[in-house]
Amino acid sequence: MLPVNNFSPKKTGFKSIEKIGRIVLMIVSRFWKACTAGLLLLFLLYVLYGGIITLFLLTGAFIGVFYHYQDSLLYFPDQPENSRIFVQSPRYLGVPYENLQIPTRDGVSLNAMFLKQSGSRLGIAPTIVMYHGNAGNIGHRLNNASLLYSYTGSNILMLEYRGYGKSDGSPNEKGLELDAITSLEYLLSRSDIDHSKLVLYGRSLGGAVAVAVAAHKKYMDVLFAMVLENTFTSIPETARHLFSWLKRLPTWCYKNVFPSVDVIKSVTVPTLFLSGLADQLVPPRHMMKLYNVSGGCVKRIETFENGTHNDTWQSSGYTDVINKFLNEVYEARKIGLIPKQHFSHNSTLGEDVKPVVDI
Image (cartoon, rainbow, N blue to C red; front, side):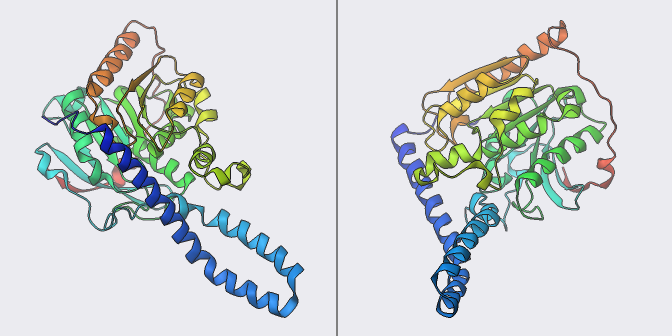
């Protein structure tokens, strides 16, 4: 059994501050490296042509670099060190699993792990699709997945976005949304699981990814439920919270927006919001705002007083809240309080999936 309340509130505060500090230093470092060559070129232009032209070129160059380099500033797949080289195997968990390479429509190969319930449970259990947060890889979330696997009795599909871990490509907003769509198409192609019990589970960045895919009508009608944890209303709002000097920067300057606060209004999927009140990266008010505007036919919000951005899942009562919500949704669907799901398409994606390990 995994420990569920083994952290100190005093320590987690300093850890969050340290993490934010590292993010700031990393962004400054990346941005400086990208601008060095451009600044040298602009200096030469200044010497040759004068200040006015250089000023316009400098302004345009700054805006261009800031816009096009945002993917590298936002996503941290190489943190912690070696995250793109080593991904922990779920073998130590002692449960049946598959390692998968799933192809996307645009030719990117995605790494994934599928933790399977044993025997006949595989075909009747819910299947939770985990969309992870920024930084690291799915191997860093195995203890979290094991907790959900054991205490909710669910199959768990852990998807690794493009550019993370052993997945190909580079991360960007549209790409991550396509990755999430690919994960659902893959599950719908499997004949050994219950398609009527698909649950999206997204933390932080993963919450925004979950909202984006749930907003598609064809998947909204299929999904059983959605669980969002410590996610943000949008990238611009989060940036303005973390960096006060960005408050005057207009939204159109952001290449990655993830406008969950607008998108979730049309999402009717039953949704559970899990908010850690000690989150110092994404303010808990973001979760409350998402809950208030959500179009979920059934929605609940649960708060965890000592829950930090990445460790809320270790809070006491965490899995009880999830189980209770899933049971409520099941009973509501059973008696017709929630509209029936519609399965109107067949996926052939599974034919191209390559199982690497099947235990």
